[in-house]
Structure formats: C-alpha cells, structure tokens
Image (cartoon, rainbow, N blue to C red):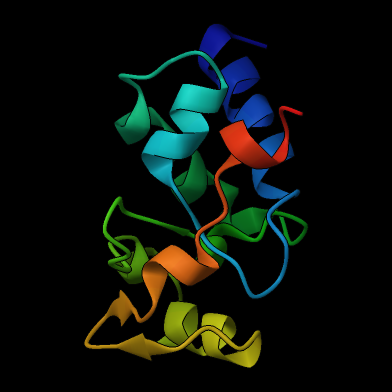
Length: 111
C-alpha cells in the first residue's frame, strides 16, 4: 500500500462516520486528518471510492455546499437523489441550509 492508498483509507474511515442526512466538506476531512492543504486529494479519494458501496461519497460536498463531485456519480442527478433520500434539500446543485446539515469531523469526533 502506497502513501496515497493509506490516505484514501483514512478518508474513507471518516466519510463512513458522516451520519445520514448530514454533509461534510473535502477541506474539513483534510483538516481532521492533519492535512489542511489536501482538500483536492480528499476529492480524488472520493472519486476513487465509487466501487466501495460502504463509502457514502454523496455526503461530501465543497466548502459552500455545492455538489462539486456530482459528475462522478452515475446518472444525471444521482448525488442529489441520494442526499434528498436522506432528507437533505438540494437546490441548483447546492445544499440548502448548509450550515444546519454540515457535519464537521473536527467538532464531532474530537470531544
């Protein structure tokens, strides 16, 4: 396993903890993992996760709630549909009430 594989696995561990009906951001995951400048690498991990059904990649959005990774999901609106099935409201490819449904691993996982 190379270094990026290990980082990807750590990302997946965090994403698996995001509760249904909540979203987090690439940057928040990177900060939690101690790699604040690695939001893009978290995005690469999310893109590589699509073969793993236990990684809810649809719950990871950009820092303002945009569904920036939606083009990596099969179908036209699958990412939005998955979020909406969990009660997250999406309008114009952006999570509505983003601050209310935002889950920050730095706050939620660090007592």
